[in-house]
Image (cartoon, rainbow, N blue to C red):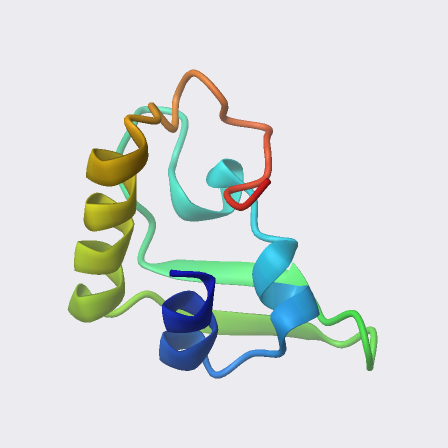
Length: 79
């Protein structure tokens, strides 16, 4: 699943592993339309659009892991 995240976002593995739930969800529980993060290798700030396919992968991940993003809002998605 980590690979799917990286593939769908077009990012390096280090950038993919640094994603937190707060990057994917608003505090009201609504999924975001984009992710802003600082690239590890270049230190550039990037914006990545969260596509419908990405949203379905996130929903699949939540279903399989039984995680509630709001309960672990400040935690990394991939531990």
